[in-house]
Length: 423
Image (cartoon, rainbow, N blue to C red; front, top):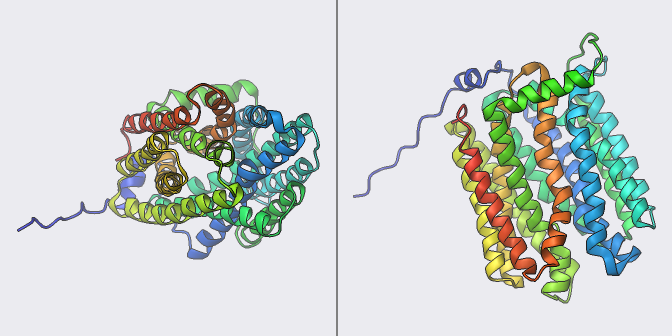
């Protein structure tokens, strides 16, 4: 008879919190998690629908012959802005003091600035104009991200962080699907599409801001560049923090390389009859698999008190999707690979976010350190088009691009297993 399997006993939350070096917080309510997830739904829609649909469409209208190069340049410069803005916004968020609350202040201001940037981007008719407007939008995105991610370390106990992380990354593909579906169903122009996602970003943010508060603080000395750089250096010298950052950067780069040129892959390489419809189908499969995987992985990770094994298996799923597309590039395989990559990315980000919050070196610089970590989330989607543009214009084209997806995700697994302070 087969031996009955007994899962490991759950690790007590207090023990995990102590190991991570953070005090145990009061549990957050279902209402808090729901509205927090709604904010992220709007955030993902506003940041990813332009990347996957609106920017490619807009640039194709502006200059069809150079659309791949233009898309790469626009996102590369926006990535540089994010690279600089994320840790700075995080450090400033840590030092902000107001009755409105330091995290809510940055979330509210960042969301409004991001929404305004989206509206301005939609009105541009030159590549230079799109580049400047989209790069400016990244400042708002960076500010909002600083407030959002710091709330997890501030408010959420360790044994709820898998579930809350699922509430962050579960809505990711849903936001993209809803946004693309709205643009496609109503045949919206890129300019109108930007306005719709900007409005929905604000609508999704308001309920959370109206219902929940965070702590106000007394004033502190102003941020100095030397202090910021020294603090960032100390964080990156923490080995577990550095390995976790490297793993997140590579796995997010793998995912971004796998999806950034999907529309052009369907149009130019597979030559499908309805590229927008096929993109919607791929994204829907990515959504369903991602939501299911993130929900299951987050809950199991919390109950078992294990992070690294879930992160590793999820990253390997993304590697498998990349190698599958590299070997068998057709529409049917693309649909299957979309589901596999969605499942891998959903599970990865749900559990990796929980792991990240357990390797933060200093409770007093949480937003700053999370700003560094957010570079590994926000910058890869911006830089991936530039990297991919060189790959797909080479002799090997898309097969080489998808092979890079597999390699990057696999190396990311190795780096995650270098983290020793988290099980």
